[in-house]
Image 1 (cartoon, rainbow, N blue to C red):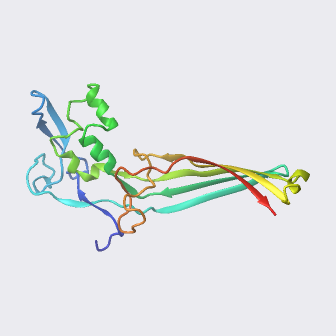
Image 2 (image 1 turned 60 degrees about the horizontal axis):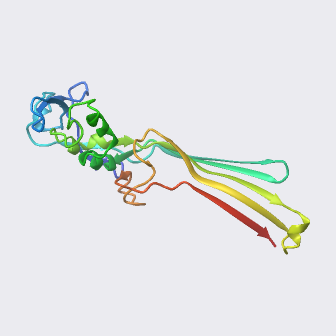
Image 3 (image 1 turned 180 degrees about the vertical axis):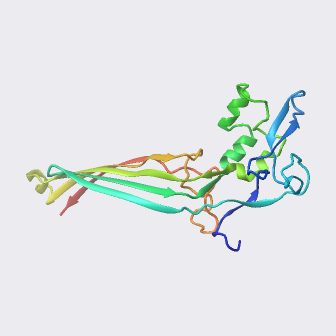
Amino acid sequence: IEGQPVGVFYGGQYARNADGDIIYGNFTNAAFPGDTLRLPLRMRTGNLDGSETNSGTFVNGIIGDPNPDFTASFSNSFTVGSNLDFNVLLDGKFGGDVANFTRRITEFFGSDKVLEKEINGDTIPLTYGRSPSGRINIYEEYIEDGSYIKLREVSATYRIDKPWVRHLGASTMSITLAGRNLHTWTDYTGMDPELNLFSANTVAQGVDFANTPLARSYVLGVNFTF
């Protein structure tokens, strides 16, 4: 889109009034007679004036930008005593949206965590699952802030320079224990804001659709210098 960053999200939006507030409308819940739902409306030509109508042609627009404002990394190495080294690596992405389509499809099929509200009676049935207002097609609902800070790696290395090492034919030996992808600080409601359904595709970023998150792992390594 001319004048917009590459890969912006474009799709169904909430209907909003002149103040920018989401417009809600009343819906009769056919599955549960007597229940009336008050749900957000999708933008149509009929409600562009801020009215509560749910008629007219659908209007789409820009609903998010997956490109981060900036990314940063912080690495720190330090030594304790004469033989023990530590290293810490943090990665961060600040700004940039994620399209949480995993949440969208799990809500539709009634298996998302938010459906607990319906099961527990905290809201009227079908407020989220298969909402009669067509909420699943208000794609703006599923665009979330994808900012995060990750504890990418913590490692400890112990260097050994003992006579028995030289008996092995080596001059030195070191043992390293490392943990990777140990923790993520984020407000994103999905499993991992870093992943993308379309991998490294530069024009299709920030799409989460049943992606497998990066695994937390621990590695033990032994290094000999000959």
